[in-house]
Image (tube, rainbow, N blue to C red):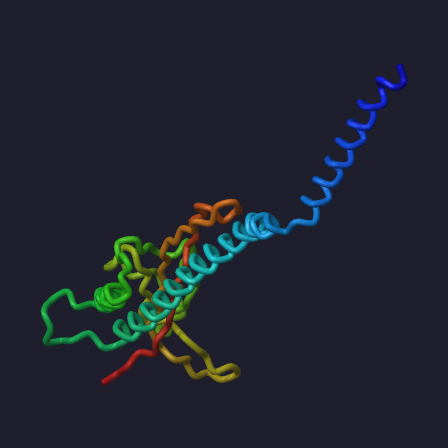
Length: 196
């Protein structure tokens, strides 16, 4: 009986040696290693590229908002034209400047809205709080506000105009807490009033 089992035992040992040899060969092979590494790294690289794109877009829009606010504050600070058609108010001048800046940057000015908290600025005439001008409903223009004061003296500070607004921006960043997150990017600027 032992003679009969001998060939099967030899065959079993040969099968074990072949299986071990096969596993050693597979363990030493590196042909599939690049695919496995790429499968691990590519999603991370893809997420980084998406992040760079969306944060870049947010930065571009924020720069446009800052430029639009500066131009709007300068337009509102200019004296109202006495020979122009009726309705040429500082708030309307500011909103027209914002629209022109937004058109150049391909942004939608109808998405603008007033800031959630109105800037607490004082009047340079009587020191009272200055509310937002209501002429552009989605932009806060505050006229005749005190921009700076000379500390320790009785002299009044510099009079000017303040323009503030917000613009919505939505991230698309899957797999993170920023995905479909709506941010309100601010735009704010002040300009000294000009007397001609």
